[in-house]
Image 1 (cartoon, one colour):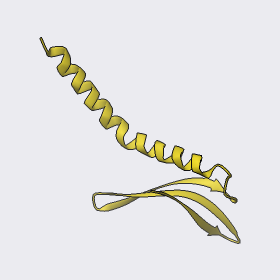
Image 2 (image 1 turned 135 degrees about the vertical axis):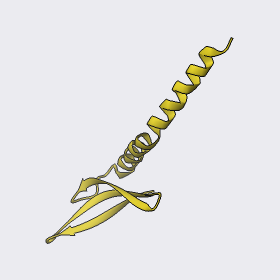
Image 3 (image 1 turned 45 degrees about the vertical axis):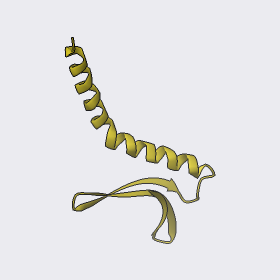
Image 4 (image 1 turned 90 degrees about the vertical axis):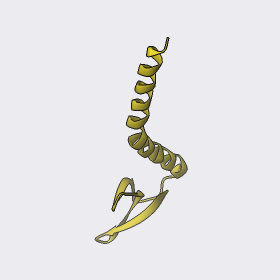
Length: 77
């Protein structure tokens, strides 16, 4: 789940999109800087950020499955 978090640095507040997930025993956090004010199109930015994370996690796995399937399919009579 992607959430918006405020981070105070000095006297100013900054906004970030944050996604955390567990990998084994560790917790991995990905962040994307939004700026000092919340953008008007935050829903679209959240969807794009989540899509990037999804591609990063599954793209390699799905490609290897596709290659293995193609290899096996070509061997069929």
